[in-house]
View 1 (cartoon, one colour):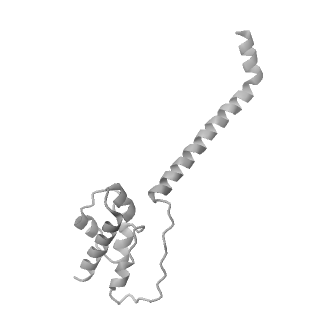
View 2 (cartoon, one colour; view 1 turned 60 degrees about the horizontal axis):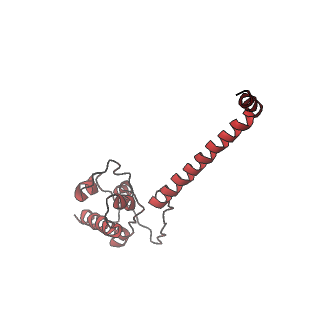
View 3 (cartoon, helix red, strand yellow; view 1 turned 135 degrees about the vertical axis):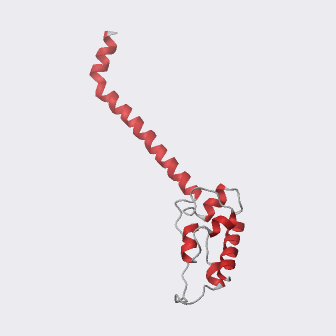
Length: 134
């Protein structure tokens, strides 16, 4: 027992440093794992920017081409604001029940709800057209 105490006294700083290094390694691995999961889920993807040459004045009505520009990286809030929809229009018409609405991306909602992403995107575009044509 005396040898163990003597060893611990002599090497206490080394042992503490090794423990801290192990904890730091685990923390870094957890951070990398969380980052990869967020990237895979699409939360960290850079949105694809589409350049539109045509300038639209505020008085012009939204055209069919512009509605087709809705992308799956957009949040429902983004679509609501960009196309001047009522806040709960898409939520009500699509039966969305996530508490994250409207601050959830279309592709993320599709993945979480096991809905085909392209089908949901097409449906959102359709209902935006329906609202614009009223």
